[in-house]
Image (cartoon, rainbow, N blue to C red):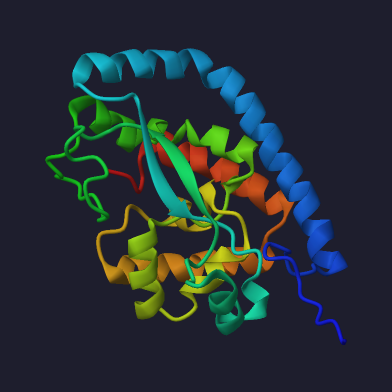
Length: 233
């Protein structure tokens, strides 16, 4: 009897030597920065946790499913769909943030938060403006879900909508998502489909030229964006 060989369900597509050489230093840099960042930010994170508890009832950490790296993207959507039964677009993971909304509003539905969103708490507005709410994602970096630098991960339902609306959106899943990225230091929070389209173009530009040195540049550019709030709420 002839045996039919098949790949294991979660076997990643082979990488070229150039990609492997580029991703190794990038990942090492991102992990190192995340580890140091957690140590340095620990006192601040403890203070933020206390302020969140004093400001409104509910958990300190907000957890939400996001779409991450698609390790088999090069095999095409038809192959992916057959292997999974449904195509989520990438591996789903739990992303951590400091809670910035009331417990009844946070995560009740998958939609973009607006600048005047009434769900946002007093402490939460400051955390979002300074991006301090993103600090728990350093744990996601150490877990292998994310990098410091990369395209921002989207919620599953919104991901499916954007993939239908925007050509090339799926290409963002070729790399680990990030806490910050080339699109984030150029543009503010998304409020429309046109905003997302502009960010997708910047994300794809980053993916093509990504490197450890490029990530260092984006990390450096993130600080003045946060401090001077050039593009944030």
